[in-house]
Length: 295
Image (tube, rainbow, N blue to C red; front, side, top):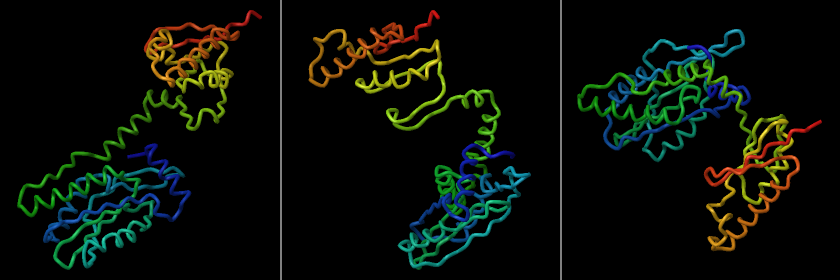
């Protein structure tokens, strides 16, 4: 299998930070609201486990690097717990979800079957986030219920998984080795309030799409991050035609926005550092290019 995906790497790092915790456990429960054939329920779990490759992923350290391998598929141990009824399930779940998995050379899941006094029952899957997400967990639980239903009706059971977690991992690994991934790494997303964050470095292009009253603020705040021949583009300067035709203005709020846009246009027109061209694309954009020094 090879290297971890980016998502798995993040989970692995979290595990190193919170060693011995159950922070990345995901737990799913399904209650069967009728008398349960518990042998067929166990059989359905065994069948589904062998269908889904993610159950058989193991993680190994190789010269300091974490690698994932696909282990041999075998019968799994399923614990059976006797309880009064489904009202006790939440208590049991809270215990089970805190189970600590050993990440290296070990299975990262555990199944439980619950027998109720009235003959009904439930099953529970506790699985580590390294080998499953919530969506995959839901698919697996639904697959077990479907397989159990087919077994008790003596129908033919589907033994091939529709969705493969391994295929997903392989596609992620192929992406990480692709030219597109190398290009995508050049994109740096900065999260936070733009009025508070500071950005270092120089850029060819800065795009402003902000609250109308903040355009001048952001222009002045980030213009020093522009290359000598860089460009600042500002969007939505027509305000649906109201800036050009004020007879369309109907409310006090619209009047305030129009005035703020006009103030910004006036700021651009009188800016000694930039030359601005207006283009009637979309809701009108301003293209402001830094003036080239003659020195």
